[in-house]
Length: 269
Length: 306
View 1: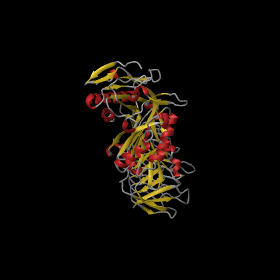
View 2: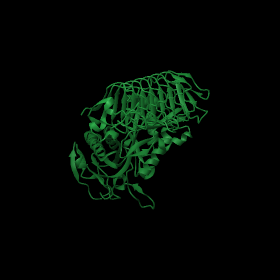
View 3: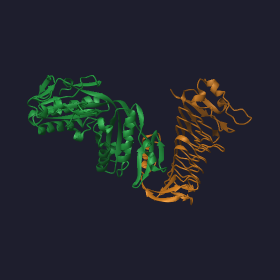
View 4: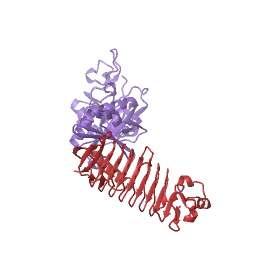
């Protein structure tokens, strides 16, 4: 059975809340009912049918043909199934997802993967600030799953990360891994200033180094932890499908001693 | 003791029409790796030392096989270790104690789960507090590890491993020969063949036990005592199971993660001893049991003939 497909008719004239277009929330609905669902965010009503040409298919396999920076909250709360976006998305893609798979073949906005608890989210392009992080006022960031951004990300990626893994193929903005509680954040490129600011526990790897390391991180020397070898193997064999580290020994910096101080930041030796 | 009838004579070796009686055990498997095969074996030997019989050791353990770098979780040489105990609690206690004292302490070692069983049992979870608050938990791709800082660097251990409750302990073969040298050659040949069967261990020294036991004894409190029916020096003064040609007996005890694995091991061990023949090895092969009323697993030698 082919995928349930939403083909964008034209660039939307307002931001759209697409959180309703997940397998769980569409269960039991027919084509006409789906087309009538409201997705606008202003006083101007916008329905699914006005923005997309709907082609019914497998509700567990959803496809967006065409993307927009105004497509917000795609895959929010996803529990199972797959969502593919052939283009860009706006904010909060994959937020609070606990299972399944979301793939974005373009850039993503703010709060991609915000507080996700499970599943796999991949963004082929860049992602905005607060990747995986909580919204303002929330206590918990990511608590599980794997988040992979092939491009670069904005500031404070992995804010309040508690469990799960974030892999960034490009560079990260300032304060990557801020307030981390645990979990793993790997930046293959260069991290901006002060990665791990106020982190309690957890692991940050800045493969291309960091613009500036906070003074409250203490040099632990050069090490080659075995766990990196296992992570590289596991991610290469899993949905990520590629190695995350090159296996070279790295310099370990313990911190942030301004907080609990049990975290670690790895930079090139 | 009643005279044992012979099920078959093959290559001049008489095979008793008897059976080995074995018991259910909880079993688990782990993988120990290190920078070299030597150090993986050092850790494994230490961990499986003094683990010959649950009667006094708390568990029975041994090395299932050596693993090449291609076969291990971290790409280093390794060893697969099996450990058996009478219940889940005993298994957990022995695993934690031996992991902490013998693997954690061994240079360059790491330890991983190597069994997907019916349940999970603590591995690193049981010893992580040795790191005194510096332990680091790592979860990814449905795996959970503990990283423990140690003087050498870091000890990596998986949080849990699997276990089975339908493992089997006490499969056995008795090699009866004219001399101790012949009995030893026969048992050695059998052990060498049995070690190639996956999922089993022979927990006694070199896989062989010379002091097989019977249940109880004449002295109060003795759980087991020498199996006088098979002691060649007691022929004539006890109800001996040995004929006039037998001058020495050795036994192999085999534990396995499944009944099929134990049967396979006994089958190849029997064949190896039979192939050796009575000139070099045993002239008679038997098996130990308790009358068939204690253990649910019965391995009849006539069903395992080569």
